[in-house]
Amino acid sequence: MLFTAIFTNPIQRLAKDVSKIEAANYSLNDTKLSIYSTQKSNEVHSLSRTIQAMLTRINEQFKALEQGDKQRKELLTHLSHDLRTPLASLQGFLEVLNQSGDKLSAQEQQEYLQVSLNNCGQLKQLIEQIFELAHLENGEISINKETFNLGELIYDCIAKFSLAVEKKGINLSVEPEICDFPVIADIAKLERVLSNLVDNAIRHTPRDGSIAVRVKRGDDNQLFVQVSDTGVGIKHEELNAIFDPHYQASNSNKAGRQQGGLGLAICRGLLKLMDSEINVQSELGKGTMFSFNLPQKKA
Image 1 (cartoon, rainbow, N blue to C red):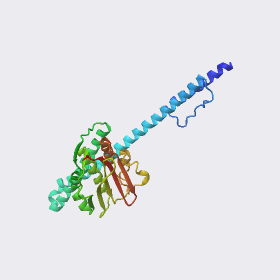
Image 2 (tube, rainbow, N blue to C red):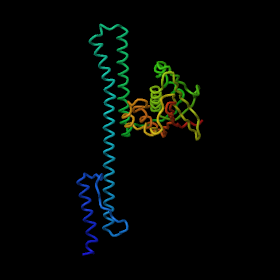
Image 3 (cartoon, one colour):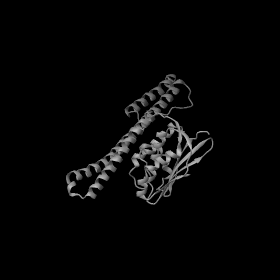
Image 4 (cartoon, rainbow, N blue to C red):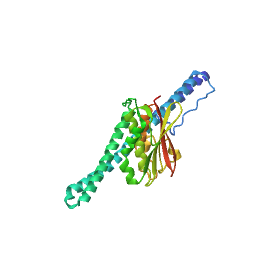
């Protein structure tokens, strides 16, 4: 009897444990399980510990899936809000123009049209970012590397933001001014990265602030590109999270935080495809600097 109990008791306890887990839908929260001795080396105790470890792993996987599903739902919720906001504004201004356009002055009509165009631009940018991020996550973006002049690309890129920086009184500079560096990269993808970083800097830099795009030589034939601003800065504990699209979307409307929407997540993904890595340094209330490396073409 004693010999039988040595083998049957652990099996009975294990069966009860499995029933508890099944009844709790594989959740170990608040579920008390048996403790199996690690000192006993017989096969029944070993099997019991193995199965319990498997149940623990299953529970961890369920939690991870639930968390991922929660994050995806939060992302969709906030993206829907971000889409509706400019869309509602656009609809409102167009309705006014349609119903009462003849009662508005020429200047008022122009202002309403300009606001409508701005909202269209916001919608277009967000939709493009959503699709681009989806393509990145699905591995559907290819890289076509070529040799080109980095300085020419930088100046072409910042030219698009001349009106935006002028409106806010921001000084946007390139250092060194004569930026003649041949690099090897995907020119279209790199332009996207630079545009996202400069746009992010403009949105979070106050009036009369400054933004600088710097290129520095490093070791091993590497160039380092830096985009720095005198903006609101980022809390130290949040630096590792700002490239997460779920984090960005869920915190994009919180006052006092530097947010890049989906742009920073896209920057990280594109640079990774080009064998580069984006880094960030920031001090709250003083500014932020993003940097990444590029291989320079050998002379």
